[in-house]
Amino acid sequence: MTTTLGALRADITTLEVDAIVNAANSSLLGGGGVDGAIHRAAGPELLAECRRLGGCPTGEARITGGYRLPARHVIHTVGPVWRGGAHDEPELLAACYRNSLALAAHHGLRSLAFPCIGTGIYGFPAEAAAGIAVTTVREALHGSGIHQVLFCCFSEADLLVYRSLLDD
Ligand code: AR6
Image (cartoon, rainbow, N blue to C red; front, top):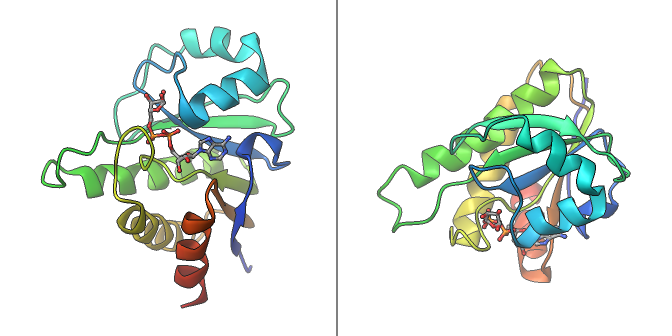
């Protein structure tokens, strides 16, 4: 089976995939950035379901419904707060991608879209984060049953970085 890995520039809340990934915080109770956009677009039912999850540690992932989103599910993962790079930030970011994919595979999902986890409010350097994202997803896809992974960039600069990594 071939898996398509792609990058696009879009608002992730518009994507019709089995799941979009949310760059959440450990409370899972919403916030700014992509998290705020996803909660606004999904509606209050998403927050109600998130409340029942009781939070999520950094690097782990949890799944909910997508409610008013075109995506059927949301996978919430918590990136590391960047503190200079020597506090396991790269490993924790890789774990976000790995655990999100594993959860999607466990639920039989076929298509998935990731935002640039950790690179906004949490401050992870964007190019390094993209390298970790692409490498980790490539490694973790084998045998997962997932057909399509999209890297959903919000800026043109991020899109160019992902395009060059995916062309390699
Ligand atoms: N669609 C796709 N990407 C987006 C969108 C969107 N609608 N909006 C923003 N981005 P961030 P983090 C991009 O800050 O760094 C929240 O308050 C954005 O340009 O959303 O993991 C949470 O509750 C950037 O490239 O997430 C946490 O407290 C990427 O999404 C904290 O922020 C991630 O930026 C998490 O910070």
